[in-house]
Image (cartoon, rainbow, N blue to C red; front, side, top):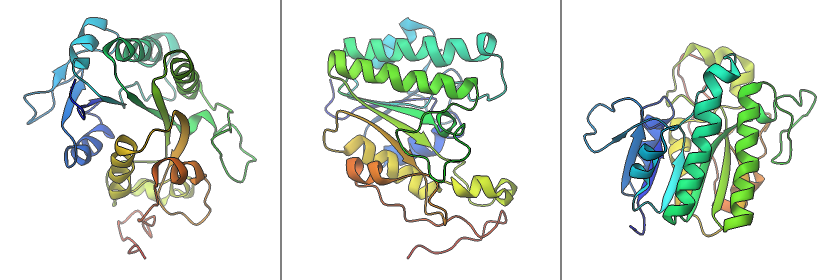
Amino acid sequence: MSSSLVLVTGAAGRVGRPITAALREKFPVRAFDRVAIPGDHTAHLGDLSDRSAVERAMEGVHTVVHLGACPSMDGQFMRDLLKPNIEGLWHMLDVARLAGVRRFIFASSCNVAFGAKEAAQLKPETLHVLNPYGATKAFGEALGRWFHDEYGMEFLAVRIGYFSGRYAEPELEQLFLRRIWLGPRDGGKFFQLAVAARPFGYGIVYACSRTREKYLDLTTARELLGYEPEEDVPESGGGRTVAPA
């Protein structure tokens, strides 16, 4: 096993592409996705629900950054979410355990807590799912807790805010998305810190940049990872940004 090889699932996705690039600045990375990744001839291709494909991708891995999932918030559970988000997650965790993986970083979602609509701030202990997609992520957090307690695998659930890897986009005219925005540089730095952090056991953290409302509680991210956001939410969807202080 490499002392630092990182397996990134969902590496071809909207979140996966910039996060994979950021991780490659500091660590050896193996990409895994069900579709080809342009320019990456070493990537492993396969489906999360295919255990044999997961086993091949997991060989020699020290840390998993599991971004792969179906992100549909209005899709049908049995048709769209079950295999990638439930069955695929089980394969990832179980194969990681058998392969001796030391740390598993799981892309959770704020949708596990958005149901708490009256809350002024969402905290790691806030659990009120908004939709079936959020329920699959809550399942992932709970399953990760069990793998940590039963097998000692480090597990970090990252409730990612709104991340696109871009600054200029019309979606940022929406006030709600501005409350949970995660900037491109902050997103890359966050996952670099998560991979390199000192042992933390099990944790749930939020990932966002600097926002006026502080709607997502970053206390645990600071404590476990030393994360401090540097980017302010753009002034508008037109892409003008406030320079970090």
